[in-house]
Each structure stands twice: as C-alpha cells, then as structure tokens.
Length: 279
Ligand code: DGL
Image 1: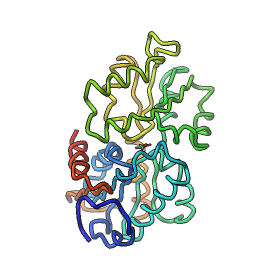
Image 2: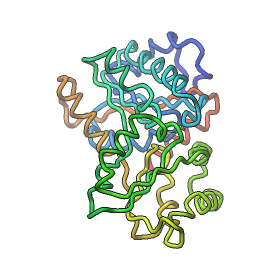
Image 3: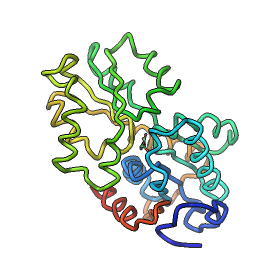
Image 4: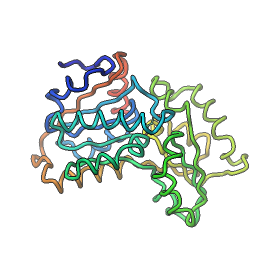
C-alpha cells in the first residue's frame, strides 16, 4: 500500500507496513504547517530519514473538541510506532496539547516530542515585554497553555489571541497574498501601535502554520515586534531524545530521505509541502 497522496484514512492498520516509516523520524501535523518544524529537523539532522504526515483531510484541528483531536493524534502516532518509526515529532501545538501527555504515559521509552508556544523566550528577551500569542482556539483554552502562560505572567504582559480561520490560508497555498494581509489587519487591529493594546514587543507563532505568514504578521504589527517560533527548540529536543536513545544516525555524510504523505486526496497538498520545505 504505497501512494504519495493517500485517500482520507479509513484503515489505519494498512499504512503501518509503510516502508518509508521504518527507522525514520515521523513528523505529524493537522496539515501542512508542520513543515515549519520539519525544515528545522532536516537542518539539524540532515543524515536522518523523515516521514512527514499531514492530516489535511481532518484539518483544522484547532476548532475541534479536545477529545476528537486526542483520538486523531493518538491513532496517527500509534500507526507510526507500529510502522517502526524511531521517534515521533508532533509538529502541531493543538495536537500536542490534546494528546502528548497520554501518549508519553503509554510509551514511556519511545521518543515522542511535541511543540508548545514559545512563551518562555518571548517573555524573557527584554524587561517585561508586551507579548501577543497567536494560536488556535483549542490550544489557548487547554490547561497546558493556561499553565504555561501563568508561569510567565509576572515577567511579561501576555495577550493570548485565538486565530480561527488563519491556518486555512496556509493550507490553501495563499500565504503571501493580499487576502491574508486583509485578514490579519482585522485580526490584529487591537495590537498594532494604533490599537488599545499595542504596540507589541513580541509575537509568538503558537501554531505551526503561522511561520508561513510571519512576514505578513510582522508587516501588520511593525518592524520592532520580534517574532518567536518554537520550531528550532522542538527540533533540538527531538535530536536530544533520539541521541539519548542511541538512535542517532552516526554517518555524518549520509543524506537522509524526506517523504511526504497526506490524508487528503488532493495531490496539491504534497506539492505544497515540498514547496514550503524549500521556502
Ligand atoms: N498546525 C496546528 C498547530 O500547530 C494547528 C492548525 C489546525 O487548526 O489544524 O496548532
């Protein structure tokens, strides 16, 4: 069973035998956004093989219930483990907040790394900054996020902003368009220099789709607003866990393979992933 663009997944067991998964690091997102993490993973571990899976058929995750996202994420991660992946990176803040804890309890010795909004560095890069955290509605309402925000409340003036509708521009390949800019101008109006809460000193990309519209966000929030993204820290943590498990590929000259899969039957999704990886 090998197809680059699998039809919406029905029989998860059928994909477990996928050879590309064996000994690769599986990277998972609700769609194409996880490519912002994959590109950091490839940069710091070019010798590794990566298996990228985007669940675009079920996207967006951010407006679903926690239970739905937990089930979808767990099913995919179990499939990667059964298929012989040597580690899993949940390159989705939403899926991480719903499922990483239970997956780690179930697989304590398997390297599973998730991503969370980079509130820590954004709150500490200057004295008491004004920090805007852009994320999905689900990420923001989850306890994991609320606890993280509470830890830095005395260090920064933190504004969480749910952004339903934003990831869809990236999913549709419309990152650098006037449409996304108009959408952002309305969404971010209160956080600009002219708005009641602005100007912001920092903005956190709390969803892995958003780095692909970071330039447009920066344009609206202004040059002086610094952009924080958790992708690099997540990639470093994945490398640390793979190394600690004794699974890091030791041939430094080896060039790893990156394969792309998507639950949507739209072939453009995989094409978009490849394009975003090179962006
Ligand atoms: N990329 C996902 C994240 O990091 C969210 C997109 C979605 O709503 O599915 O949260």
